[in-house]
Length: 127
Image (cartoon, rainbow, N blue to C red; front, side, top):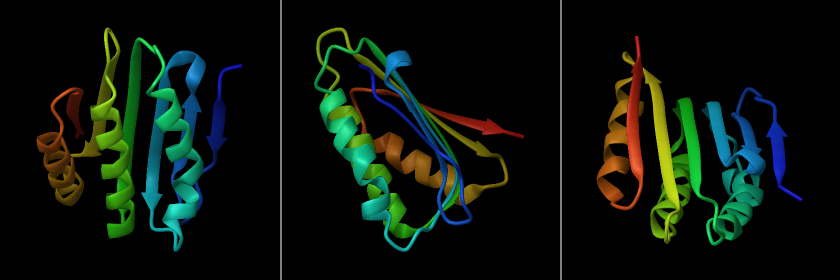
């Protein structure tokens, strides 16, 4: 049975959708929860297992408007896992989506993009 998770956005946590059947994950909103490690733990565990399967193509849409430094570490960890596992015909696509005026998020996406070599990392700027 394919894993499915949907968490609604709160004032300090993003909307999260994981739809394993469709090889898709989305995060949208802000992330400055006091305990980001516990908040993202289930996602981290799932992703580690999922990326070791023959998934074909996996897409991660990340549309965060604000995040704290603890979230940056979590996101980098998740992205580095995605970069580590594309095996055989597996392909990972990350769409880093942000408003053109959000320079901090754009710069963070550019930094993340420089860290990866095995995945497609698109920075999508919405005006």
